[in-house]
Image 1 (cartoon, rainbow, N blue to C red):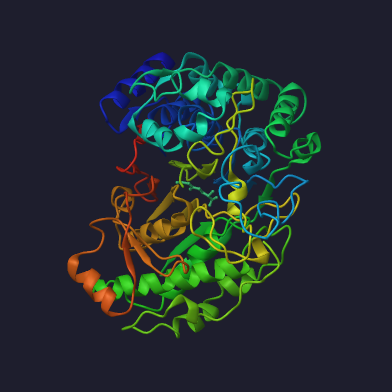
Image 2: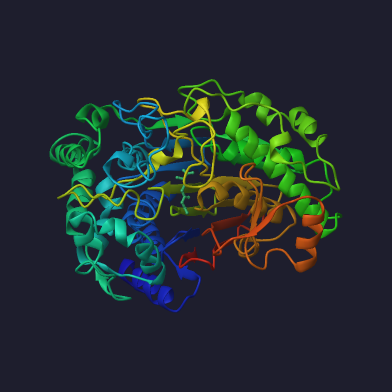
Length: 558
Ligand code: DON
């Protein structure tokens, strides 16, 4: 049966169908790569639960979408277990090395050294993904880690055909990758872009994954892999020590929660800013009838809510283990009402008129997301990242592990923009062992009739994308619609609405400009949202992958 089911998955994947037949499971999975979705179903077929499937999908994405996430990066897994109602956020975000310091990306004059926090060994923070996989499997899964990671190991060893998206992102980082022979040797073909559909094999990564699968966290954070990582990083100008790896721990956090017009929202707590900013924006918008408003007013109000939520992100958010965050206030509905009272229906408020100073002591795009839900309501929303496409471009020789450039998510200098144009201050300053502030927003939405699981990559724009999808859910639309919503975005600074071409009509552009908004078309469509839905009464499932990407959404029926 297993063989038959697996063959059916592959066959259907090839023909872009969205339904598979699996023994005894009714599950929906949407991920950014067909092979990752197939890995999830393979593990369910072996008797795994949705958390084992999440391990399998995460591991597979680390192999087949190396531009977006991997063992050298970090992740947030938001979980709900139906039998006891347990809901938790596994924070596997990377940490700053112990030798890091607040001015490590500045020159002697105190200016930022361009690209130092983005490219190469010094940009890499201590990975959390391997520890997160072990934790997720041991604490919530039913199967051994080695079984759940088997599809990922197989993909790394026997290879897979690379697609257009992979090539596009590789092109973006090819110059950097060519500086590192150990990285170029894996991803490039004699220094050039490989051919479309050529087979990418990653034998070193297969070995590292096998070691993690067999030995758990010790297989990565101590022993020979750890030695290779630390040696390579130090040789490459980085500052990791063995203590950094040995001391890395994931944290389980209570998710943040909110309500919007009868919808329960559950999302990421800091070290990600996503959940708080999302709920704050929805709280502000709850005072309006957006369905009744004309389109220009609607988009203006959503923009003003985004502006205020991202402003508070800038002022207050960072790693909760290092700073005090006024979470209760930021999530409070009366606080949101105060912010709402500063919004005029007919006029934009320039961002520099918002009160509050950025605290002065210091402080591109790829990532991935998948969503899983079964008919009982067990669910996982996970966003995983190495930050920019192909992270820092740096592979530690002999490990196959491509390291992140997540250090750029810290504020290297108060008020200076990072790779996503985000500014920050003391709350998100670099400190040894601290987690850099993220925008990743894996989220659950629930109303009387359905439960939604969703999220997306997209750097600073993640939060606004999830917000627009949540508003679309509130309209009564399903996952096919949320993932396709035309996108626009405001992040407080720079003070501009960025929009996908076609997301705003000519008259909306005119109307918003007349209110005082600056507008700028995004160069490309952005995001790669993956979403699933359970209809609570009918027990039916739906799944959708963003058409901007190459993902695959599937529903299985027993
Ligand atoms: O954690 C963050 O907010 C970023 N490192 C996410 C980067 C990202 O989504 C890139 N994707 N396109």
